[in-house]
Image (tube, rainbow, N blue to C red; front, top):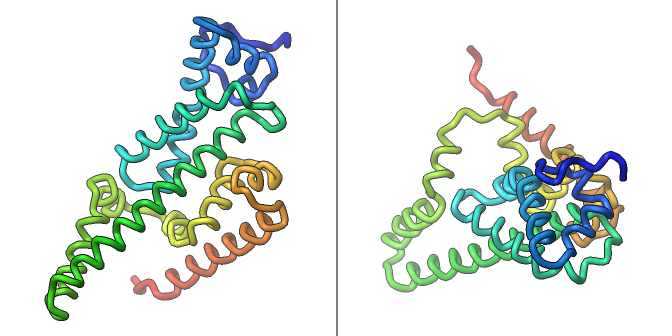
Length: 216
């Protein structure tokens, strides 16, 4: 490939998805290690951004990203190249995010149930609210909520989990319907349906908030 960049440069997604770069990643010893380090450099910010749009805590996001790269390193020998390498990595990130959300929801439910079992009805209501607030009040989340956010950004956050991820992959990451379907593990038709619904919900949410905004 005549357009390959110098080996010391940070690769873009086009280069990372090339057969030549995959061959370098699969090389044994230092050449493969150098290629992997360059791949991390070229993808770190974009994958971290994708994860941060799904999870609140910066620490948790970095942990998930590390788990993703470990999964990539472990799975590379079995990567068949039937899809783009970056699409495969997005798929790994999607599954890691879903695992974290599921674990958090289970822990949150257990915390709530434990509080309800040990408190009176009146106290339980107050304590349960305090517990949920504390659970959801990581410094990064508090900072994000205190920041001035656009209505569209808030509307995206209000979307159901799967609809939000479909929207992020299609309209933010610019993936095709087929690539998004591969990442999400659903059909392209399901992607089209969820994307249509997500876009409609965003418009309706923004219109509702604008209609209810106080007049100045």
